[in-house]
Image 1 (cartoon, rainbow, N blue to C red):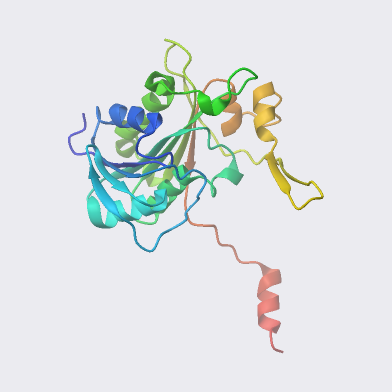
Image 2 (image 1 turned 90 degrees about the horizontal axis):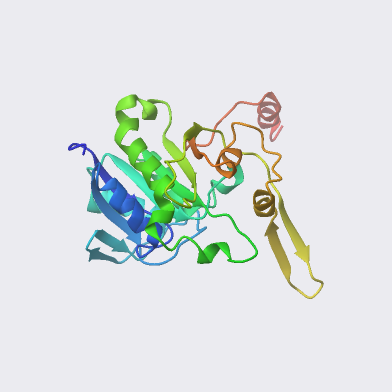
Amino acid sequence: MSESLSLLLTNDDGVGSTGFRALYDALDAVADVTAVAPADDQSAVGRKMSHDVAVTEHELGYVVEGTPADCTVVGLEALCPDVDMVVAGCNKGANLGAYVLGRSGTVSAAVEAAFFDVPAIAVSMYIPSDDDTPWHEKASDPADYRHATAAAAYLTDRAPDAGVFEEAEYLNVNAPMATGEEDPAPLEVTTPSTLYEMTARHDGNGRVTLHDGVWEMMRDGDLPDPEGTDRRAVVEGRVSVSPLTAPHTTMRHDALDALAASYRQ
């Protein structure tokens, strides 16, 4: 155990989720962990922020009646301000692709930490779907998260001293679901896929159905994603690690400069 390493652990599935406890137990072997987690499911809320939140003590730390981003701010500002790192997860379901980064509560908790200059890791697990069992009914055993928790513990313990966070502000980690006693899945450094397959269908009666076609592609193994992308790595059984930065990029554009110069002329 790294005696000097202290962690704030949060998630978006809620403090009672199986993945959260599995990750807590794995990280507890390498660091001093304080849970600051939502009271209930806050999936896909992005960086939604509350004005004030209720906080109660919990056997693992604290429970917050709020969002994952709330948990990061509340933890770093009020409950455990001296932690060395924020870890979010383990999410039940993958957070893959560039378009997901702004939606995910798990990833958003890590992004929020970056604005405090605190390194962070978001951890999620891909659960393949099939015709027999819906994906959300799977992954009820902590052992199902073994690839994700092993990778998270390794990166938490090694990444700071290796200088990883001198280049990246946070890591987005996605792992395949463990199916037996196989060896830990290998790690692959990736970039987020840019594949986007969202559709919206109007039924003509005032309802519009939004659908993400990527999940069917993943189930069928029919992915156009190239090698080196996060989604390709996970579908092929590897743990994806994407090193990312939080602030939006800013670039000067001659066309916009010209428009600004001519405004009100």
